[in-house]
Structure formats: structure tokens, C-alpha cells
Image (cartoon, rainbow, N blue to C red; front, side, top):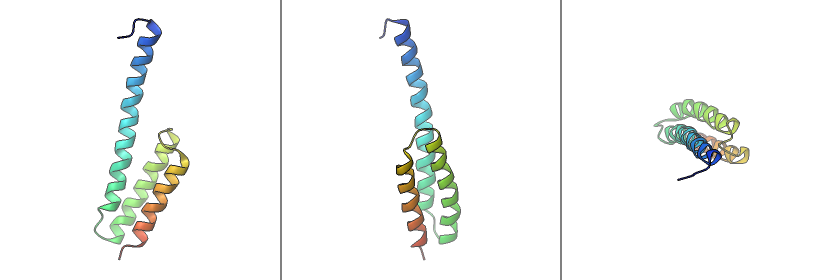
Length: 84
């Protein structure tokens, strides 16, 4: 366990950040899974809109790099377009 006051605070803050990051990542992964699990193209397109919004939110919050987000969005939209 840390002994310095600043180290204790750093530990507390890192736990808070870890919880925030876990929640953001979980929400994003769930949105992506909903697109992949959609049964038809219309449902996938509806879920895609939500997923893109959540992915962009993750970028704004600093959880994802913008290029990684662009790759996720590109793959999901390609997946949605290929459904028949």
C-alpha cells in the first residue's frame, strides 16, 4: 500500500478512471455486438446509428484513438451493407 499522501490520491483517482473507462468500453462493445447480431439489414442500420454515436462518444472522452474509431465504424458499415 502507498504511504505518501499524493500516492494514495493517485491510486484513488486511477481506480475512478479505471471504472469510467470500463463503463465506456463496455457500452461501446455492446453497441457493436448489437449491430453484428441484427437479424436483418434494417435492424442492423438502426443499431449502426447508435453504435457510431457511442464510438464517437468514446473518442471524445479519450477512450479510443480517432483512427481506431474510424476503423470500427468502417467495418460495421461494410458489414451492414453486405447484409441481404
